[in-house]
Length: 225
Image 1 (cartoon, helix red, strand yellow):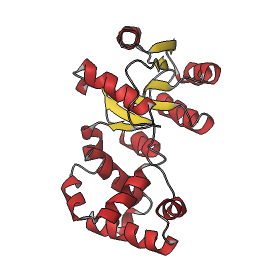
Image 2 (cartoon, helix red, strand yellow):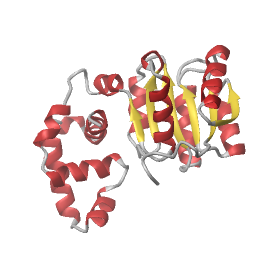
Image 3 (cartoon, one colour):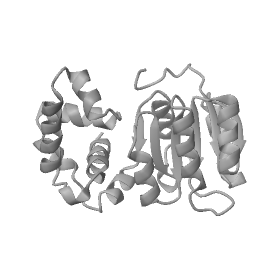
Image 4 (cartoon, one colour):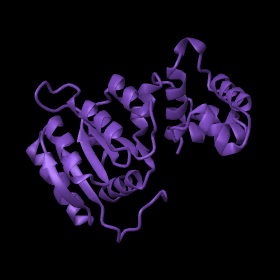
């Protein structure tokens, strides 16, 4: 799958947002951009049902939706990723929901995006992000990355990585396991583990961060793209 879909390829999307005005606005914007919105819903359960029914190319998801307006959208997004791995998910949120964003981004980031509504200021850029995510790429707002990294940018530290370490980190961002990376690069599992250890060290990710070190390393990579 290419990083960008051709402009004449019509995507099929489901839009989920409890704000009628915002939902209708996104639907109209996507329609003008040549995206077929097959369903527009206002809560997480309806979103999952719509994706089950239509199996679209992409689901655009708000984080906070009825009934509790807390994490319904993220939980729906995780359910979609589990049940329909071929459906891309683009989260549109008013805020950086750190716990939920980390949970979502801790898995395979291919076909995944997290954008802040207030920072979407250019329609063409937004449509490009939609197409990139639908094509299997990623789109994560720099502010999301900044907050998830504890407000301390590590992107300049990527320059410390060797080409091979950078390649390994890129495969981590695609969601590959250590064994998957070893198979992709035709190297031993031990070599991959050594490269990943070096990545963590050069990005100043301490062992006390545990499993989150992998998430933080991937977010650093995404934030530099």
